[in-house]
Amino acid sequence: MSLKAIIFDLDGVLTDTAKYHYLAWKKLADELGLYFDESINESLKGVSRINSFEIILEENNASKNYTDREKEILANKKNDYYKEMIEQLTPNDILEGIVPFITEARNNGMKCAVASISKNAPRVLELLNISNMFDYIADAALVKRPKPDPEIFLTCAYALGCKPDECIGIEDAQAGIEAIHAAGMKSVGINVSVTSVAPDIPLKSTAELDFKILSRFG
Image 1 (spheres, rainbow, N blue to C red):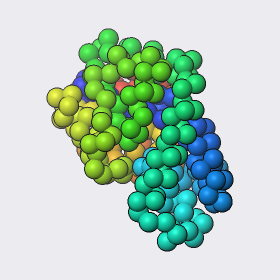
Image 2: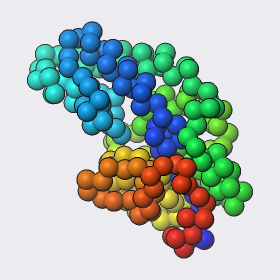
Image 3: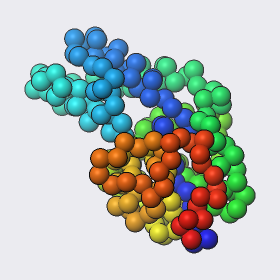
């Protein structure tokens, strides 16, 4: 097999903290008198924190009501709410099929990394007790360009000592799939709502992950 590494997104692939993101944004929106629902929340998938807040403000025609500094402070306030909520996470929150998939991949000599734009990724992985399953966890604070830019996937590949075409990325968001392909990697999509680039291997859930599917890439 020419593949040497698997690069995982975090939210929606390793675990699902979407409900906590929603509740945290909802709490902030309610405090500010902004409208926010699950439809708007869906559009935030794979989007950075500050850009997510910008989307919420634009939905409310309120972007000009806040300075850039105020937006940063409020987005960080949302993150504080989120960090409090994710403390509830346990290894029981790892998505189905993930642990056996990673275990088999590592047993077959594959390197593994996490490419998450979330600065909370290390803490989430710690709570799930799977940090030691990865050779590299991207530092979101050092990533200048969010997905669909390929920067974070390329960073992971180079950190693992692999060429992009030796890596496969696993994502659950359209922006993530675009980033993987822009990086020159193959992709597996988990329940991706395709609006542009489709994943090379589309799956309905992580329960369908099987190391044998990687053989399709040669």
